Image (cartoon, rainbow, N blue to C red; front, top):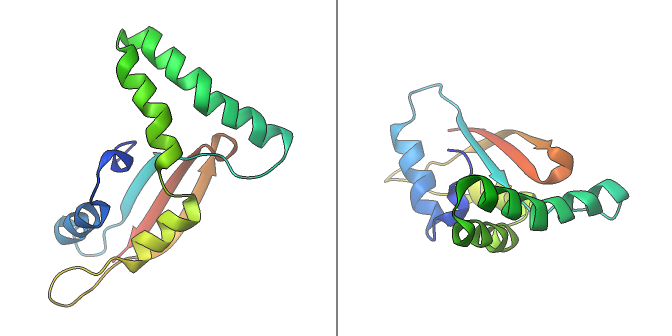
Length: 120
């Protein structure tokens, strides 16, 4: 799932559905925006980019400015990468209460995008 789970109010249900349909040995891959963490120059520029440039560019390119203003707010309200990892690892699905183990978190675009890879 790419750039969508932040718009789901009950994320644990989505994670459990992914767990249910994932083939044995499969990997869950989720890519999502986040507010860049850190105090360096690149983190600051990435924060400006994600807060202002992405919504304006998206609105201009799509012709749907309202939807792209929502983007800025949904990114701000989404859990931090550490919090989202905790959510993924803490999900308890089905009768067995099984869940995911985090394999890797790839930070991209100066911390404004993460790729989360987890296995059941």
